[in-house]
Length: 332
Ligand code: SF4
Ligand code: SF4
Ligand code: SF4
Image 1 (cartoon, rainbow, N blue to C red):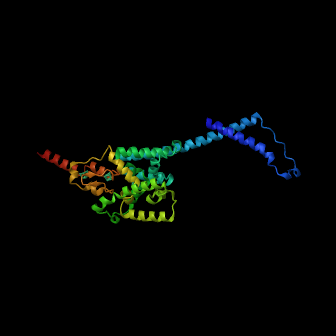
Image 2 (image 1 turned 60 degrees about the vertical axis):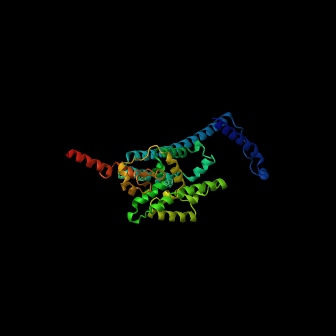
Image 3 (image 1 turned 135 degrees about the vertical axis):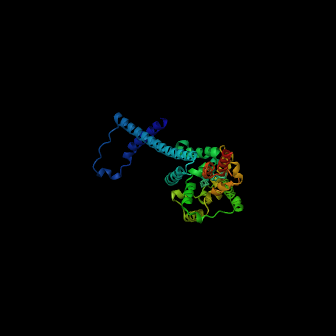
């Protein structure tokens, strides 16, 4: 209300100033022209009407702001809820729907992705005002909380770029794929931590946040880049056709940060005894996140491909061994 009153005072002040300066601003030749009608003093009714108009304008602006924010928060909330639901149900179809929505809405409509710029902002404690960024805070809080619960869940379902490369991977024929050898993979995954470290040091030394344009491709959803950025993006997407999720696995600084946080993950993927020798899940994982019986939590994005195998009683050796043992026991 204090805000509204001050706006009224300013508006009335401006109106008074206009009335006062209006006659002084008349050109010198005005005497040669027909005399203008004499200015009538404002009545109390006029002031009341002006006051009501100002109040109406202010309320309309506030309600437009609120309804826009409510739509943003609701749409984001529904996308996050669907992502969690598809994950809990281990439904591949729902996962695809969730990925498509992430690309379409969070990518091309809102260009709303967690970026290294958010890391810079957190380091300088320069975050957007809450009333101007409820959807932003919802996304960031969800990303952090889900990382503690499940690991890089944001990478596996929500991030529009990660969703785009996962969908790309579904349409690219398997014969085009190149898997780096294990020794190289083990070293390449550290590159993203180097990128994160160098970006943070550069930011702390220079205060320049624009470095993000050359180390992450998220700007592509705004369709607003220069020739160098588009060229780098074309090279990256072409390479991603051959090496699935290349950027996410080796280069993404946000993925690196979430990977570090994932070491705190509470609900980890379970493993059977049979996983010590079985390589089925390791071959299925397109993120290089399984090494023998171990799940590498900092690389795993909870895509749930291996978890569906884990529960598949017709394919997972753990269940097949159990079934065979039960059949043998039944014969005795
Ligand atoms: S690794 Fe980076 S680009 Fe890939 S899904 Fe995660 S945040 Fe997005
Ligand atoms: S298929 Fe079953 S036994 Fe094999 S690695 Fe996966 S969960 Fe383990
Ligand atoms: S296949 Fe399993 S280990 Fe690999 S990223 Fe998906 S959930 Fe993680």
